[in-house]
Structures are given as C-alpha cells and as structure tokens.
Length: 434
Image 1 (cartoon, rainbow, N blue to C red):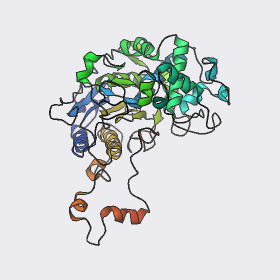
Image 2: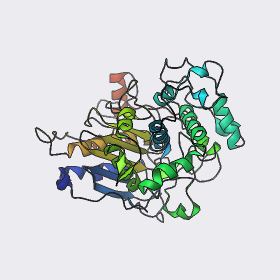
Image 3: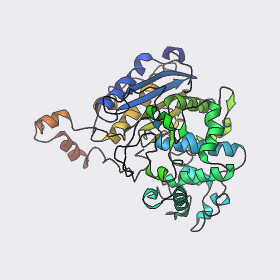
C-alpha cells in the first residue's frame, strides 16, 4: 500500500472543512438511493490530501467489508485511458520516440487501407481518427491475439480528422503503439516507467489474486457467466487479455492522489520526474472541442460540475469513477465507486453523474483563499434534489399530484420528453455515459 500524500487540515491549505463536509452528505445520499454500495473519495490541494474517506461497503450484502480510502481497490474503467495509456504516450513523446503527427501505420504497418495511413497519434488522442466507438470483440474473438487483430482491422467510419467519435478502439490503438515502440507490453511499461517510480503500489492491470479481498466487486451477472471481482469489468478489455488501452487498470484513491499531484507539480513527484512540464501543459490543454490530448476538459458537463477553473481537466470511467484536476486552484478530486455492482437505483447512471458533479462543486466551493472570497453556496446540491434517481416518494405513494398528473408526467408535458435519459447500454458506451 502506498503512503499517499501528506494529510493536512483543510484550513492549512485555504479550504473550509464545513463546506467540504457537503461531500459526505452527497456521497452517502448516492449510497442510500441505491446508486452504488460504497465509494472512496480524496480531495487534495497544495500538495496535501485534505478529505480522504471511504463510504459504505464493498458490496450490498451485510458481510461485505467497509470501503477504505487507503486499502480498497476499484476497477478504473476508462480512467485507464489517461492514467495509463495517455501517460505512456507522454513518456514516449518526451523521449522523441513518437510525434503527435506521426501516422499510426509508422509503428503498426498492418493498420492500413481505407485511409488509415492518414490517421495520426494526435487524432487518436483527440478521438478524431474516424474509428468507431467500439465493436463486440468479446463476442467474436477467441484469444487476445484475435481481439488485437480485430481492433487493427476495424474499418474507419469517417474520414480521419473530420469528426469526433469517442472511441475505445482508438485508445487500444494507442496502447498497441506504445507496445510497438517500447518493445514490451503496456502494463509492463507503465509499471516500470510510471507506477513503481511514483510508489503507486496498488495500481495494476490484472491485480494479483492475493489482493482480491481488497477489490470492490463489479458486475454480478456479466456475459462471462460469473460475478466479477478483481477481473476487468469491460468485456472488450477482457477479450484483449485484461490489458487494454481503453480499460483494465485497478487502483485506490490514495494511489491516484499521487498521480494527480504529479501532474499538478508539472510531471514530477517526490523528486521523481515522470514527464516534462511542457508535456503536461500540452496534453491537458483543450485541443478539439472539449477534448485535450487523451484528457477531457471541464465544460460544465462530464462530471466536473460548474465551478472548476477554465483550465481544469479530467476523465470519467463507466464503473463509476472520475478524476478532475484544477491547476488554477492547485486542487484535484477523485471519486471511485462500483456503481455497476447490482445497483438498486432505477437510474444508477443518473445518480453517479450527479454525485460526480456535486463532488467537484463541493471541492471548488470549499476554497477560501481566493480574491473576493469563496463562491456563494448553492441552495441545494444535485444529490439533495435527486431528480430522476428513483421514483419520487410522493408519486410512489399517492400515484398522482393534486392536478391528477404524476410529477414525471408534468415534467414531460413541459419539456416534451422524459426529464432523465435512459440508462445507456454497457455495450454501446459514449463519452457522456462514462
């Protein structure tokens, strides 16, 4: 287990403990609503962890152990794209072993035909390669080698550089590119160049069986036919052998706090430099739409809330994870959950979306050492309103309002559609569902 960042009282880094306490209420409301059985949170500022807590339990059963911010390991899902794959690309970029406008076919010659020769590293990072969002590798491939060949052979669905399509396949191609350049597997490269040097001892692809008791379980009835715990939730990452550019990493909030602080420090932590400060600046700067290179940026959506700075960047993961970094405030926010574990809420995707945003908001609102003083508190957080999480209690009991319509019906009549979008399929993920 890693030691994590030094712990300081909120006041010591210009934050309000009373305002940070909103985090506890928000996260616990998500548990009570059935969105996830437990969660781990860490908020850091100015080099220290100021709010590091575990909430709830690993699973829904009484015998499930409590979540520990120090010990509990979660499946990161698409946080793998930035904590793992993008960081590996940054390391090789710093060393001059790849350039952003290099064609991918330079490193993977079989990635060719149908305009694939025009796809660059930059396009993969920006999700503008023309590759589709994904394909059902898990249904068609019998070995990781077959799955890899299928990714490489996938036809483009748009001209390179012309359209945005959040693509797991693009992240996989980045992972293959890292492996081709480094001459070793993605997991080995990341352990050697990033995780071990930073002391991130609980961050792994394919965690060892000895860690199983510390890993939060994910899906109970996946296509694999058995409950998942310590094995990657994403079916395509599993088809690729558990190590993939788009998913597969497991970690703790304590390890991720070290990673986030490394980026806030300009690529260095505890006298260990992982990437250059110029690479951090380049890869986290908005480049195409809201996307940076690998990373997303905060545009009031995607789980970053309303109050993070204009230079904030981060990412989310389908299992209920998120990492947001605000360099202007020298602050980061990490949330790890297993919302795919037999969620009891009617719309767990809506629950986690609101909790992510509330967590980022609560952290930003807690900063006090800014010109003009802290931001005025909102009347309520999203979790307090819980719109669309479950059927409203009054409607469930009484069926109709005084005017003879349910609250949901009134909302539909005003907007012309249901107030909450349907829960997305796990097989057809998009940037917004993460």
